[in-house]
Length: 174
Image 1 (tube, rainbow, N blue to C red):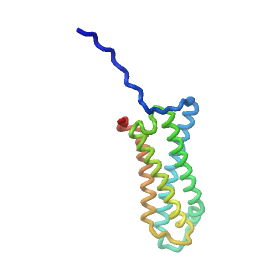
Image 2: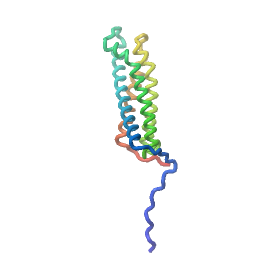
Image 3: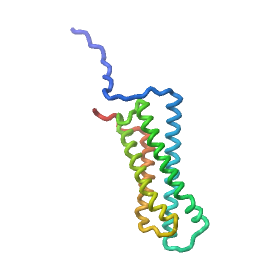
Image 4: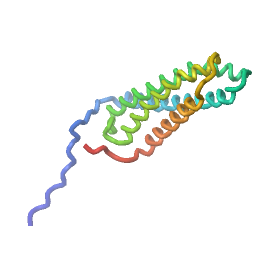
């Protein structure tokens, strides 16, 4: 009877790019990623509320002090959201390169990367119409489009958060 062969280890992935990063720096990037994602979600929630206020006011010529305050801060707030989204994207790529998860090694990471890019594009598309709404000079032509952007971006960011927690699906086949 021939001897049993020893168990073989899995071969190392061929295209494995992993940057050697000190633990403190990796954790700092991770905290920055989580905080920017939380900020981005918060800005998106506020955007959805501002859209609801604009929707309620769309046929009304009166402006409330709350609306005037919202009008004054809406575009800077959305720019902060876009910056938070870009910071989230950059730190996510850095974490993908510096951790075992990789950028496209696991399906959930690849999906998060795509969701992040799409949500950044939605935020950019949102800036024009919401800026139009906030100036009050010209009524918003298509409130449905802005509502779609706000709710879709919030749904994408929520789904990305769920993916981060549950890490479903497994590895991408090569």
